[in-house]
Image (cartoon, rainbow, N blue to C red; front, side):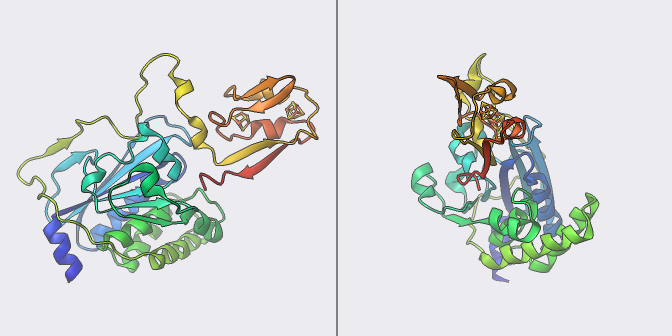
Amino acid sequence: LKLLLISRELNVIRVRFHGRGGHGVKTASRIVGAAAFSAGWQAQDSPIYGAERRGAAVTAFTRMSQEPIRERGVIEQPDLIIVGDETLLADPGAGVLVGQEGASGVFVNTSSAGQLAEEFSIVPPVVTLDVAQMTLDCVGRASALSVGLAAAAARLGGAIEEEQLLAAAEEELASLGVTVDVIEKNLLLARRVYAALAPIVLRSREPAVTDEIWIVGEIEPPGGAPSVLAAGNAVHRRTGLWRLQRPDIDYDLCTRCGLCFVLCPDGAIAMDEEYPVIDYDHCKGCMICAHQCPVRGILRHREVRSW
Ligand code: SF4
Ligand code: SF4
């Protein structure tokens, strides 16, 4: 009852998800929307994409309200920010912290809780959990974050019961053609994430507009559609932050054949005094170099900063 009263006072709860292509951020927003609907809320969910590419920044939104939701478009003033990949915090173009001042909490999937608030000047309380590791343990793929992020949002928002979350996750994954076995693994993940977190106290906001449709979208589209400002700007975008796996050259094995230098699709390998050197600011971790190296001289490691 207390949660319901808080929620009614809030009028509408706005959740903004940030992740990368392949994380399942859109699915996460959809699961939360469906779960909220089954919990008796009116709900709305939508994604925004920029580059339709695995690893590119993606943003998704869920609104839930006890009243008709007349807002549309991006959420500028979120109550809850869910960050699927901490490296997005280091990319100003991703807009993760847009409107953070009025938010009640920022959730970050990270293996290193560290000093995120200080490092990135995060104003609201920061909640962290290594959802990627939990996903790896339960599902077998650290990047399949949709259910884990949905569970975090559902739990922190305090408006969705565990059973409603599980039912929504099961229905959404089934609609995507996910096998029963993988769905079961995801439901285990959902239970674990839900149990690991506690609801945060949502701050009261100005009531939502109720008498007309309100299209929100005056700000720069966050994350999903980063602006291309000028020719040659790519060097300034640290696309290496997309990387999930890190190639490391074993110089004892390397024969200096130069194949990796030639075949890297992003020009992220230079030949320095005949040895290849990887530019980690722009290597996206496709691992083509590792596959093509004839002496298997490029090792594959998990990118610990991202995961
Ligand atoms: S492909 Fe392998 S052996 Fe050839 S330069 Fe690159 S790391 Fe060295
Ligand atoms: S993983 Fe290798 S081929 Fe792929 S972007 Fe990085 S250096 Fe280039």
